[in-house]
Amino acid sequence: MRVLVVSEGKHESSGAMENLLKRLGGDQADFAFDRVSNNTVHALHGKGAGYFKRALRWLLEAEKQGFDAMVLLIDEDGQRERARQIGDAQESASSRLPRAMGVAIRTFDAWMLADETTLTTVLGCAIARQADPETIRDPKQICAALLANSQNQMTQSEMYARIMAQVNIAVLDLRCQSGFRPFAHRIRCLFEHK
Image (tube, rainbow, N blue to C red; front, side, top):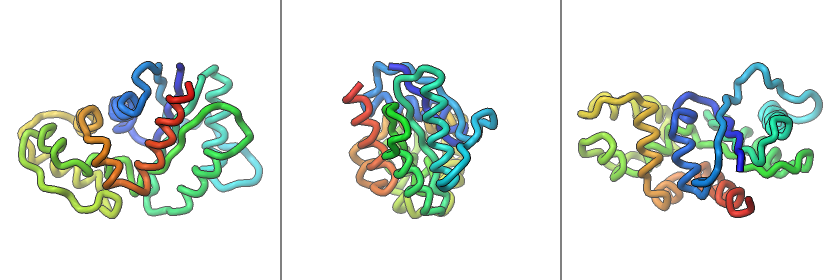
């Protein structure tokens, strides 16, 4: 199964998303990665809000390139309407291509803060339970600070990839119910129906 994975940042496409997708049932999939902001793929014209049209355009692009499915994840960044727009694109009948779309609340980085046991293992030092990840104003900055104070030398992208390879999915599901839980459900359904 060839899957196009479209996301926003370098941290997602540097191993973290692939590790997460494999753990959610895509261990036999062949992934290709691109960024939502790729300026060679323009949003559709016509009715609909920005992220809705952009998501539909990516569906058409995935079809054009011969992919069997598409995964799209964006950050909410405090703009609640994004969840509705992506939900509408998920349900759109304008394409028959199987898809799993989601919105990380507030950002993908928040998912890294859900499981303090995994954080402790990856960073090599005791990490206390973090605040509710989906309410943290700047989770990327918290992750950077935790990494800077750790004994392990790695990039933030490497940190995220290692976390997603080891995170307790049940804990992530429980602590990130608004963003991760529906996205993970869609991912599992996508790979169950391959």
